[in-house]
Amino acid sequence: MSYKQKIDDIRDELRSLYKAAPEQTRGFGTLSKAVKETGVLGGKEKEFVALGMALVQRCEPCILLHVEALMKAGASREELSDVLAMAIQMSGGPGMMYAAKALACWDELAAAGA
Image 1 (cartoon, rainbow, N blue to C red):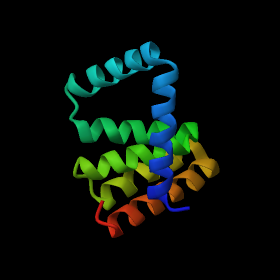
Image 2 (tube, one colour):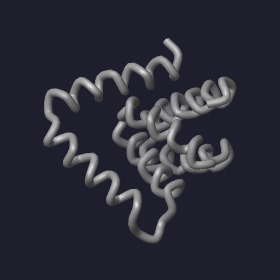
Image 3 (cartoon, rainbow, N blue to C red):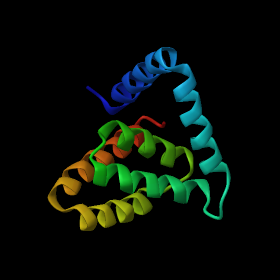
């Protein structure tokens, strides 16, 4: 399955969750929006932090969504690679495995012009 398809599937699953728990997911959305729109770091930097945390937590759906968000935020492959290297340093072998997924996702989305 392609990373694009995985991202689409994640979004479908989230839509179902939003319907099942609308108040709770709306609350999480409000928190997410507030975090992204305030503070001294820009959106791209915040997405890099989120990606690093997703890698260390080994959350593949989070990794894929944050890679996509980084592309939209104007990140470069070189910046991504630097963050992936830091995440590997902080999480060892498992981080390396998930970093490889993040890079593969980036490359697939970049090739598709996402």
